[in-house]
Image 1 (spheres, helix red, strand yellow):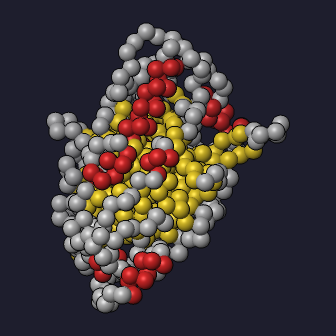
Image 2 (cartoon, rainbow, N blue to C red):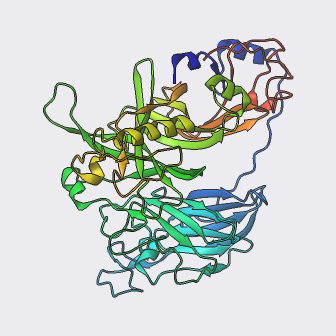
Image 3 (cartoon, rainbow, N blue to C red):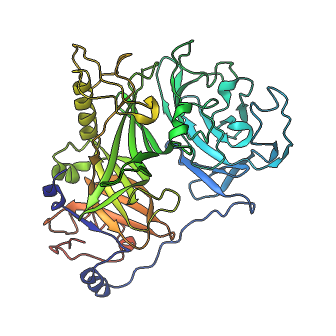
Length: 492
């Protein structure tokens, strides 16, 4: 994205008001704060791990330690389902249900690792840390357990116990069973767990084929596994999945993964972390469409490369006009922290950046076209361990090309850079969500200290008035300041 786009973008935030904005706020009468509903949980160990909202009813489902909660839209408890604790040992694989485990068993908490609503079958998929990642299928109305598959190896989805180690995307069909794309860190157990796979979501929650691979034979399966040779190069190699979504004919995951690089002027390699977008075709049972492309952000010579959070939204008319895109184009709102070297202890400097998904897809298409002309190598060191030359083939590669059993999986070497729209130096941004309100793009950003910033993107030089500023001031008491008709927003 060009520097010209940057000059079109300005930001307003009720937590980061410029002196001019603060002055305007002091000239206006105060407005009463809205009361906020809260839900503290029922137990000391009841840490909340995941949240999903039923878009049809407004009901909220919370995945916690040893509990699944169903709440009303005003955060009143409707139903509670207990998921743990239970006797377990993380060294047991498969769990004792499948074969005897000789490790000592202790009472172990069940940490919710994934929570998804399966709208088609009116059920909740709740996966926990017990027994190497067993999932429950719960009825949405009352959290009654419809099924808990456990008797096949495919039923154990992840051995990582931390919340946030698993990400799932449901692909729905009208006349056939849905698919569940699962992405997970493997925690040194690549022989047990694929890092990405596509699974069957059967209509019957107790069916034998629930969570089975979409396709699996002796040579090919709907999965990607980390080769054991990779661990000889990077002993603690793993792929951490930050976000996932589907768009058009593809499923996407945003990841953070280590790699070895040679710094300029150095003969030795050092380990850094790189943020990458992974793309797969929804209908690709053999995973020949797997492509990785590095993503990052830069502003004033400072690189932001450690992905913290992401959210998919639409552009909206105002932002689309600035980006040369369509209002219905998918936009990725992303938060990166500064640098590449610290994963677990990221620096406080962070940036909110946006990507036009179509531009990333265009870059992937260019890479596919060049590789099928026989140019370069597959550029996927962790998966192929060594450089493999691209093979030449005469074929047309369009926007929906899903790969062949050659030149796959494929990596893109050149980073796609996002457009930085806001930076924070003292209180690292850690989460983001965005939506379109009356043609304007609006983002909410959460920070390390627990604050929330409201960020609005409007065209630079556009006069703000009651008619144009998010419609009748858009909850003006939340903004903390009024903007006079005809006033100009400052560039922060």
